[in-house]
Image 1 (spheres, rainbow, N blue to C red):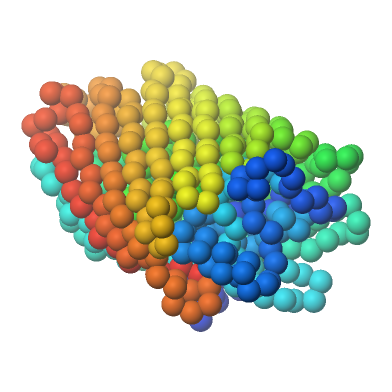
Image 2: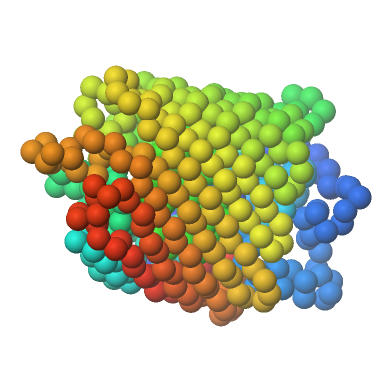
Amino acid sequence: MSRFLLLAAVAAGAFVAFPAAAQHMHMPMPAPNPAPAAGPSQADQPAPMTHDAHQDHEMTAVDDAAMGHDMGAMNMGAMRMGDACAAFGSGTALLPLGSGMMTGQHIPAGNWDLMAHGYVWGAYTDQSGPRGDDMAFVQSMAMLTADRELGSAAHLQLRSMLSLEPLMGRRGYPNLLATGETAFGRPLVDRQHPHDLFMELAARVDLDIGEDTRAFLYGGPVGEPALGPAAFMHRPSSRYMPLAPITHHWFDSTHITYGVVTAGVRAKVVQVEASAFRGREPDEARWNIETPALDSWSVRATWTPSPNWVAQVSHGRLKEPEAQHPGEDEGRTTASVHYGDRRLAATLAWSAKNRIPGETLTAWLAEANWNPAGGHNLFARAENVANDELFPDHADPLHDVKFRVSRVEGGYAYRLPIAGPLNVALGGSVLATAVPDALQPRYGSGTGYTLFAKLSLDN
């Protein structure tokens, strides 16, 4: 535990010295022996990490393309350690390695390799209709990871991730049709809750157990179980999406979990893993570490046939995850496909959460980020979800009524280098909602726009 607290202190210090010091890193797939990818199509393979002038020029173009969603130290580690098909997203989730190779701030420390990533994201959103609102807010995340070899067949990684989003206030920011978690004892509706100060304090050990096969153990007081796709902040397809998806609590609300243990095996193009974790979502006290527990479970299988494709299916049983549904457990099933190359990153996902007792609520999500040239990025997301939490007041006639609602959001971002790994992306997005006739008086037109500047530490 002292090592976890030390990592937390270092990452917190990064906020003071440089607020953008470390976002969601895409972790390496540790293996003791490098094995460069080979195949008939050179364009489909990750670019080699060399330092000749021509290669540096090409990598700069890739950086400007902004494909890879802050995939720093961990993807460099992936090349060094030999996984030719996948990079880590969040927790132990995988993402396409072909989205691009980026590096954050490297910090040598004896036998340890330290890497810092981060962002500070300033935004203003204005959303219309009777339930719309406007607000200026700041999102932030800092991450410091330490890697070292343990002999010839094992690898250790220590991970810390923190956020200053609790400064945003308990109610978070406006986000039409979003639900989940509470503020001041009331369920949040049409708002996105802030993330906790401690987003991850965890460790991972990988052990070579055969040719192209390794076992791993991941866990800690704060982490992410093997359930669902990589969290939305970590996906290349949502790199510049300024608002959280309304399907967040169907796919990846477990990305901050207090108490996680995951064991798995990675064999060439297949990864199988299982987790024990605390099913309860974080409470509205965002500055503390809640009491860890292992009262829920999940299993996940991931297929990575090439550096461009990752597909996963997962299922979990969560113990009373939502404060507004006391006494109700949840069976959650998800499936997703990710695609990534130098110009395009895309995700298609489906989820069903079965309240026990209660109804089964399903959700769909599709999102993409396209870099046509240079620092230009076009992005879009479309979602459809069955939600019965839009009216939490028990006296409301629509309380606990299930409605299938949709939202689309799309926009543009331009990425500008500043110095070294420091860069800024300037952009904006527009959104529109679609609701049943019964909700028209409550939501009206349901449109909005968001403007943002995202300062990041990543190459």
